[in-house]
Image (cartoon, rainbow, N blue to C red; front, side):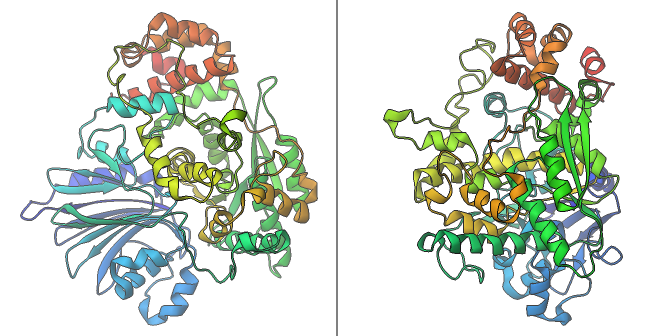
Length: 603
């Protein structure tokens, strides 16, 4: 995993000073601590910071051939197959990313259609002078762009564009409304005016510093050819579909284990990570020469009554023969490190799961370079209760996902705040409209989540929290082969007897019955409201005193909210305001971290 950045200049624009490129590289150093390279050629600058995972000695970037120059952030899991198809003469290194360069030479701008993996790629066609920016269909890897006085700038993180001075710091009130009400920001536009996301699956063609065309590869296409799926799941028996899922899961986990460095797994005790662990264990037992032990990590919390699946995770790991560690996350730890946790979320998502994810990443990074994780299982196989609620008949209480904002009806926010009259739900509505072609109401709700919630909250969280520690995160359930099985499932293999992820549960019952996949799960909930309430008086006063909070909320109501944060909804709102206050100090005011959460907010 790496960081990439660069500039595609307009004609006759002088190149930017070297310190600008140095600043881009410096800002992305945490994504690639193993080396940095800056490459300047014919109106295009490319920056790469490397985290060495494959071809440790020879995989430095940029990668260059007779047609193009490429920098990439990602892993291409079908690299061995591409190399076999194109032949050894097309390659100079062992880097998996070189297969993208070789494919471009053969296929031109359509080359991303042949990739299987997670990636954000910048490719300079040295024959035409064009630049292609490409992002994987699920949006696992991030990529941002901005129009500047030099031309089009791009980077793996908005913070790099800001720190290099290519974009002025500012804040979009409409995006802030979405962050407050949804806890993430959907769509192309970010909270920073002038900085946009390259959308999941999108390829942009850039000439003379301007976008000339764009096309998009969907994460869940209506047609997808794969040798693993000779027939449609909807037309087969449940047992045949289980066999197809088994083949897909084993193939995906095997591909995601490919690395020249140690790897492990974040294990929650839930269905998704249990499936990945089971596949990893089967692969290890089948290997004649296992190279490393299975390593797993689980987070638990010190709050009384917090949902805790640590014991279930430990038992799963023991059954799989894994070396397991349970990490206790305490209130004291959270308050000490929360400013730097929030700071890593430059594209903000106020998901409290950033807390355990950051701590787990910090711990795992001391032992491994790659961690597998279960993101995507809920979205592809129907794990959320809101999916089932959304597909009930209207007379049985059908509910529209994301229909209410977190703060709706609480009278915490000022009615005259900037952006109060904007439609914060517009991005979600656009995703719902785009998902209208999905075959069933259930599939339509899932498709909308895959388009927005998944890339702009869950995967964003995973990327930033792991990359803050130079750790690569891989998501085997978000693989084209697995997704192709999931998208073809009839609704009764997604939900049955009131339980989602029915087919995954069946598979787990068959291969790891000790996981008790049909037992009621506690879920994974961070006790952030409990922690806030315990320090509610002090925290509430500090948050209410921030100018960025006073602009949008009634200070006296903010203080009362923090005192009542042990209630579910009040806790969610208090967390949202605490997150925003810390985030604003770092990324809008550009103020340095000043100690723990109390010290930072008091300065």
